[in-house]
Length: 123
Image (cartoon, rainbow, N blue to C red):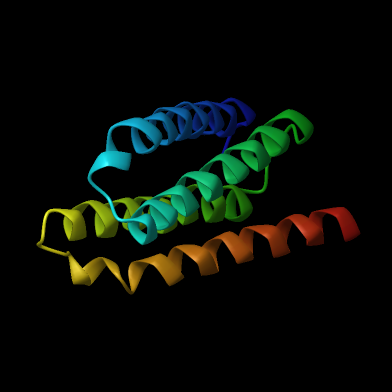
C-alpha cells in the first residue's frame, strides 16, 4: 500500500467523521434515544481516532505496512459503519441484527492494527 493511499483513506474517514458527527448532533438528535445517540457518537469517535492514526502512518512511513494499514481501514469500516447501520435501522424500527457480530470483528481488526504499529516501533 502506498503512502498516498493511506493518506487518502485518512482524509476520507476524517471528512466522513465530521459529516456524520454533525449529522448525529443535529438531524439525529431529534429522532434517536439517548442510548442510540451515544452509540452513534461512539462510531464517530472511533472513526476519527483511527483516521488520525492513518494520517500518522501515512505521514511517517514511506512504505506503510500493508497488513497494519488494511487492519485499520477495514476495522473502521466494520466497526463504525456497523454501529451506524445498527443505530439507524433500530431507529426506523427494523434493526439489522446481522450487523451486531460485525462490530466486534471491526474492533478486533483495530486492535490488530495497533499491535502491528507497536511491532513497527519495537523492531
